[in-house]
Image 1 (cartoon, rainbow, N blue to C red):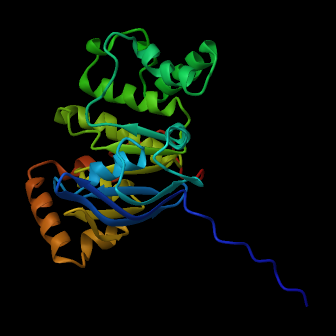
Image 2 (tube, helix red, strand yellow; image 1 turned 90 degrees about the horizontal axis):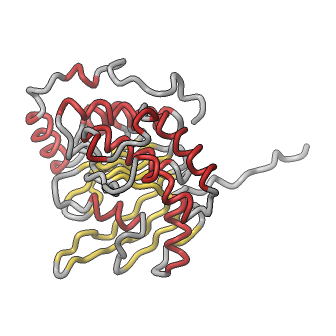
Length: 278
């Protein structure tokens, strides 16, 4: 009787090994190792100064670790222009501040990178940009300038701009931290829609309700290291470390006055009705 063929396990889309980063004498990343599979949604949380944003900047090649290894979709992120270029084409990033070019229209902000990085013809870049602007419900604002938009609209443009490069991974660095409370939900709706569509993403956020609903896995960082990680229910209901218990106690108590039903089931409407594409 012949044996059934075996298949090697799928390689993670992102593999980080023993990452160390210093800013002067501050050791901001301490032996950080992390893997993220395709279509996985990982939320990174932790107190301010724990290294969350630095980790994302290293993943996108905006910051260089002093030691360790980063491999994204089979390409090792080395300290070379060629390697960084390859990785940045596959990794989209949305920052706390919107970082839109104020002298360019929404459409031009979205077509700039595809034309220059992907060498896409202008007509094709504009068609793709309008598709992504429609996805974030802003196609009617394509010819406006950033100053004519609200903060929430500008952040949604920033998301559309990142998507125009057709990235395999999206990184979100506290995308709602610069927004007024009433604008937070519209941005989280868009991110939730991307999650439902199967986008691989790593999101740094203090929105714990969103984290519990959207994440496949939550990673808790403190003092530059990964302290604990696991499924959302495990992390929220049965935290193993005192540091995570203290963080959740402080974070959830601070949010106690906010309407908890804001993030209840059904309140965040995804752009796609199912998760069958994952």
